[in-house]
Image 1 (cartoon, helix red, strand yellow):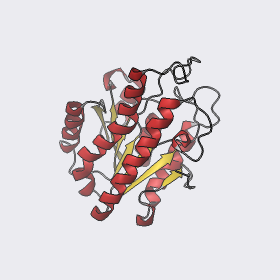
Image 2 (tube, rainbow, N blue to C red):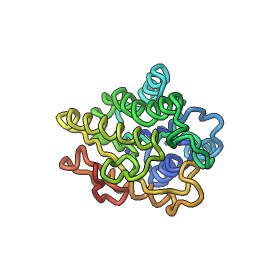
Image 3 (cartoon, one colour):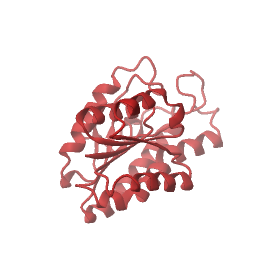
Image 4 (spheres, rainbow, N blue to C red):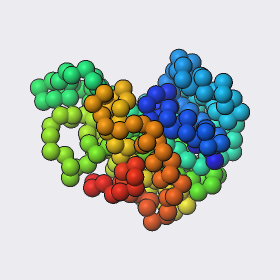
Length: 237
């Protein structure tokens, strides 16, 4: 099994990378600065034959193209893409940057580029490799914060909007790639104890990663375009 994981240097992405490697799979682990990702470098020492570290900035077209070339140099196909890279500006700082009165254009653009547009363009670039793989699947890490049905607060404006946009992009993608024999789903990983989730979060990234890997294994054609939790339960749009 060959998996491509974005944002693989920490949190959920790192845990997904570790668990896929422990299963015996091949992983293309992408992050902005892999040379500075100590835990990824340690995993490469341990799994040199099955782990490829790639530099990837999902907001940069040239960076995406270079990462695709890096995969093509090592394999002729991918089986799973996990769009995990994401930002939550000022996460954990306790400030009001995503609250009314403190909203800025720069924060909004950065969040939308990384969380919504980036995953779509990475998916587009990797489609040929996914079509050449075995039952190609795209799992994009969304959030319950992106659910219009569940939205009952103002803060966080940008993060919530970016995840809702991601949901629409990937739902649109699902409508097209279903005809190619591929599957695209959105996954709410739960509130995890990561740098983004903060110390008050209730869930370990290892549990979410385990559930997401299981979900990827068991996806059926009928689930294409769905929005589910890491345990496979439906999330309202």
